[in-house]
Each structure stands twice: as C-alpha cells, then as structure tokens.
Amino acid sequence: MPGNQPAIRTNVDIRHLNSLGLPCRAAGWCRVHHWSALQQALADPRFAQQPHLILGGGSNVVLVDDFPGLVIQPDWHGIDIVAETSRTVSIQVGAAEPWDRLVRWSVDRQLHGLENLAAIPGWCGAAPMQNIGAYGVEFSDSCVAVDYLDLSTGQSHQLSAEQCQFGYRHSIFKTTAAHNWLVTGVSLQLARQAPFKLTYPGVREALDAQGISEPTPAAVAAAITRIRQRKLPDPASLGNAGSFFKNPIVSRATADALLEQHPQLPHWPAGEQVKLSAAWLIEQCGWKGRRTGPVGVHRQHALVLVHYGHGNGRQLLHLAGNIQQDVNNRFGIALQPEPKIIQSS
Ligand SMILES: Cc1cc2nc3c(=O)[nH]c(=O)nc-3n(C[C@H](O)[C@H](O)[C@H](O)COP(=O)(O)OP(=O)(O)OC[C@H]3O[C@@H](n4cnc5c(N)ncnc54)[C@H](O)[C@@H]3O)c2cc1C
Image (cartoon, rainbow, N blue to C red; front, top):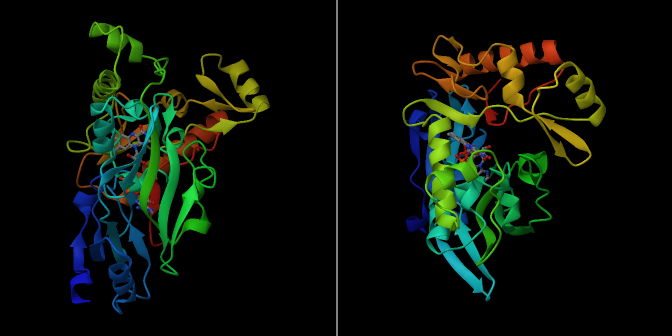
C-alpha cells in the first residue's frame, strides 16, 4: 500500500538526534509505526546490505562514525489505560512516547510508581534496554511486559517482565539475542497507593525545603526534577549522555580489599556482591572537571562526560579510554560504558 511506504531521507545529519550532539551523517533515516513500512524500509536496496540502527531520543548513544545504513525511529504513540482495579492501574505505552511525559501523565493522575524516575531523557521504548533507574527505583519495578517486533521475521512478541531478565542497567534487550528486536511498546502497572522511596540522599531534604511533609507523587517527581536540574547538565546546552560509566559491581572480597585501603569509597550492597561508586573512582584519579579540547568531564559530576561542541565521537571515546585506564591502573577496576557505542570499526 503506497500509504504505508515510509519516507526515507538520505544522507541525513543526525547530530540533533543525539543528546551528546556528536556529528554524524546517516545514509538513510525514517520513522515507522507499522511492520509493512518497516519491511519496505529494510528491503530498500540502498540499505539492504547495511546495518540498521534503532534510535529513540538518542540520549544513551555515542555516535562515533557516520552511519552507513538506515536509522529507524519508532513512531508508536499513546498512553492507554488497559485495566483498573481499586488498587492498580495498568497501562500500555507506545515506544515513541517521551519517558518524562509518561511520568508526568502518571503523577498528574496521582498514580505511584514512576515519580522517582522523573526527568530521565529518552523514549519509553528504550526504557527496558538498560532498565532505566534513578533515586532507588528502576523501570523493572513497574514493568509488566514489553512488546517487540522481530525484524528478521516480522513477528510481534511479548516478553513478561521476568523474561526481560532485568538487572542493574541491563536486560535481555542488551544481549545478542535481541539485536534484531524493535520495542514497540511497554506495559506497566501503577499503584493508587504505595509507600514512597525517599531514602536517597537529598530527596527528603528537597521536600522539607518546600514544607511538604505528606508528599504526593507529583511533589516527589517535582523534587527529584529540581535535584536533577541542579546536578546534571541539560543536553540542550551542554552535550552529554547522563552517566557515562556504570557503577562497577565486584565481589565482596574485592570490595573488602579496596575498602581497607580506601575506607571512604562509597559502596552499596548488590545481592551477594558490592556496587562501587564509579564517580568516586574517577574523581580520585583527578578527572572531575578536566577538559581535553572539545570534550571533558563535567565539573559537578565525575560520571558525566560532556561534549562542548565541534568535537566528535572518537575524541569522546579517547577521553573515556584514558579514564578507564587510570581507574584500572589505580584501583584494578574495569569501568564499563553505559551508553551504546555505535561505530563502524
Ligand atoms: C541528562 C541525562 C540524564 C540521564 N539520566 C539517566 C538516569 O537517571 N537513569 C538512567 O537509567 N538513564 C539515564 N540517562 C540515559 C538515558 O536517558 C536512558 O538510557 C534512556 O532510556 C535512553 O532513551 P533513548 O530513547 O534516548 O534511547 P537511545 O539513546 O535512542 O537508544 C539507546 C539504546 O536503545 C536502543 N533502542 C532505543 N529505542 C529502541 C526501541 N524502541 N527498540 C529497540 N531498541 C531501541 C538503541 O538502539 C540504543 O542501543 C540519562 C541521559 C541523559 C542525557
């Protein structure tokens, strides 16, 4: 059907489609919201032999080179209530809905569950990828299921939250099994009443400062948004992808050995293991606030690498590599990048 044909643009500058603002030209770009359009786009002889890249809000990717294939942005929209009980509200959300719009939609309806995840950039379809998390809450806490299209077969599937294998900044969608999957939507269950998670440093204080002793979901979301705005650079004015490295998770023995030498190293339990503060490790190596040409480490947050403009992905990766090397040499810890690195070689 001609009406289903995706409008593919060629040789597209996608600098404005990634929050780091890294320069990149894509051989092709399109937005799609049904399988037949996707199928036609994937079969287009200009791109059939090339890789494709699924892109949401571009807030967790490092575009290193020009992209030789087709960049596909999903266009599934909508936030729909699919079931309600006296205690819960179940919703289905399209992949292209901005995550923070969903959070605001939920807190406006006095629903609990997403308030701590306010102001995280990106789209809902990417939320399951790394199981987004902040202020003691993760996407997996509310997720019921994820719908995806297998691009190699055109079949739609649904995975339950358990099948998604959620972990710390991890899910099945980050594994090779999922390399050809496009998330079309997510199903969440929110609560009409639930205890708030306010133990993360600064949250209770932010509410107190507003004179709020009995918070609502909207008040918690607003407090967390304010804290984040103070701490994190806005990609609209300074390119960044949020935390560039994951907090490393190490064995109890490794943590004990490190803590003996560095008792001030912030750490948290992670099941049988221990999660260490990557920001602290980086700061100890003297990287916080350091700039090398067009890229650097944010002066307020050692985990956030920034692009000041007129740089490129290679320069950012070079900086990240130097940080990784220093942390490894000094502490014996291998830091892992959090964003997806997109490079041709
Ligand atoms: C200022 C700032 C603060 C941040 N704070 C946090 C935070 O607190 N917690 C946190 O967890 N993250 C945080 N992030 C990272 C980022 O916002 C999240 O990872 C977000 O979920 C990425 O969404 P996106 O739509 O931008 O994904 P993209 O960057 O577009 O894509 C990320 C990855 O997911 C894949 N992908 C995207 N959409 C789909 C889809 N529909 N189907 C299949 N694959 C897809 C892409 O191919 C890519 O591999 C922050 C980023 C910034 C810039």
